Image (cartoon, rainbow, N blue to C red; front, side, top):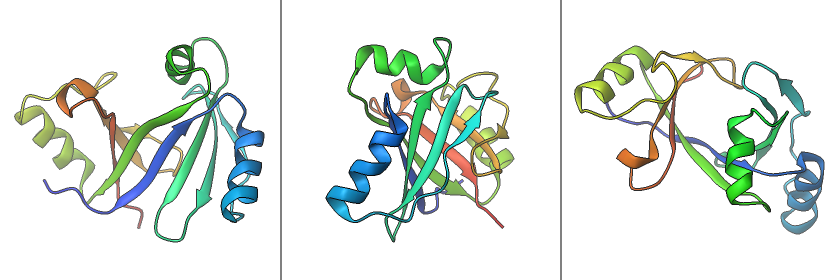
Length: 138
């Protein structure tokens, strides 16, 4: 398995609307998707197009959200994860397991905010950085 391009950088924030406005005002990043709720994932999400990648803004939908746990430690928000595309999510999952990494949740791919299968590699195996691997969009 080889990681492909950096698809996005996940940023956990307490107020997604305010963050959208900040990125537009400070950096001219005004190509932004609508804010969408993903109850199954426990987050509100929007993507900010930077030209060469995207920023995924994540706001928790409630206290049980995994993003809420991040914000308890980082109340103003911050970098949550990096997401790399892979050609085959099942091959990536098997490769990560074969290398002894810990996958979050069940370790089985599920549909992420881009509508394609994803998995997450535990930060203890990647020098403190949460890594999302996503099936490259068609």
